[in-house]
Image 1 (tube, rainbow, N blue to C red):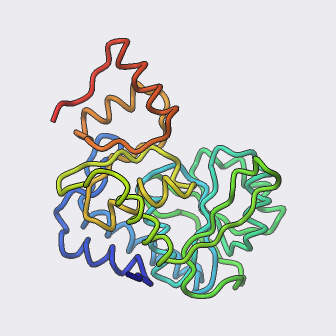
Image 2: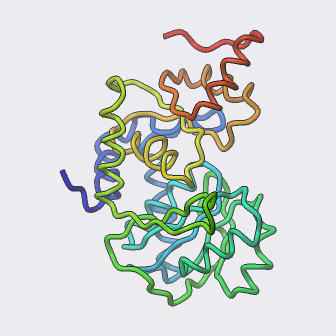
Amino acid sequence: MRLDRLDKEIESICRRFPWDRAIWFNGVWWSRGAFWGLVEAVTEKLYDSGFKSGMHLGLVMPNCPSFWAHVLAAWRLGGAVVPYNHREPVNAVTSALKHAKVSMVVLSKERSNLVDELNREHISWGLALYDAPFKESVQALPEYPGQEGGAVIFYTSGTGGKPKAVPLNHSSLYMNALSCIDQVEPIKDGDILLNALPNSHVLGFSICGLLPLLLNLSQCMLSSFMPVKNVLEAIRSSETNVLVGVPMMYQFITSALSQGESLPRR
């Protein structure tokens, strides 16, 4: 099955089930209706900034509702997103954003140290809170490096050399998410997935963040996996029952459990 516009599918679900729980973040549940309201607010901001079809939007943010609102807003306007690990050094981030020919970039407040370098590279930028659109009046650069249909450009870790750009379209993301689900035991209505992997990477983006939005599941979204004590508290508070992670994460969790921490029982 092909799906050419993920934003259309997610919008349909949010409008059909506006009161369903979508995202647990910082101790608060966001309904699908409230989350889509944020998407619409971001779309308006991007549109007013001149962001158009074929443009690339850079995102240097941790996991948060605003990250996904900017992703969907860019898609609604026919653009693609370039999420980059917000923990990377300034030169690595700006080099990737310049290579991807982003028309503008949205930063979290923790990465305001990028501003001077972005200005030197003549890249438009705006700062955004975790739960709101970017605040500054930004004019998108007239860059049209892509075409409508592109969804996201990921950058490899660079362990084998310089990080490489990997573009994916909407249909590729959709099939990647569903094929991963086919490899695990069935996820059912009412399940709550942990979204603690960096959404700037393909696994965290497609499985932890995107998949719950597509399948009308709930997610416990964390801006960081550390400290583990906070993760376990979030799991208990949100009643998360599906953990998506990498081996090192499970080692940290089991170590914390062996020292007296506990998980919810469902």
